Length: 222
Image (cartoon, rainbow, N blue to C red; front, side, top):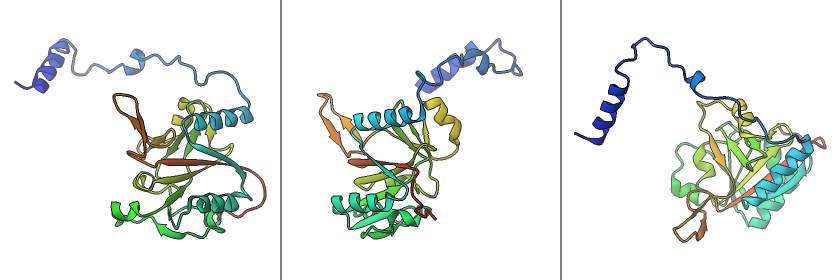
């Protein structure tokens, strides 16, 4: 008898006296009295907390306005020396209007080797969580497939402030569709061995830059 059979057998015995048509009272069994956020903050304070926690996770944080975003992205890609940048299909074209690198489009046929030759990827996000310093991608057109943010070594993620910033994880979950391919990112990819030696870039980008885009100016995002 396998371990699986033993576990299932114990479950059957434990439920032997429960009628088959008995309702499953998950909602009654799980308390929902937890805090939706910790403390009270203004919108500006929430954005500041996001920036602080992103930096604490070793992400590089930049602040800019909508009008200044194309110049900011041009500068970040130039500083990186990026010659090719991966672009999701729904990324607003105005964002990279001033950037020089060759655009590589997100294609299903792209191999991991082709993606690995790309220097940088630029995406939007679905939501950003201030209390945890987390950005969430959900595969929307301005974010593309999950793999395009895992293989390239440099990821620039643009967060629309304050529309895409929430204080807590419960607030973020209310905005997300559970059936979508959600990727939760807290800083650059990293892992530690048994001696706690940190190694970055193991299962995702070695460098994560988050651009907090505040309203301002009249740059065209279409």
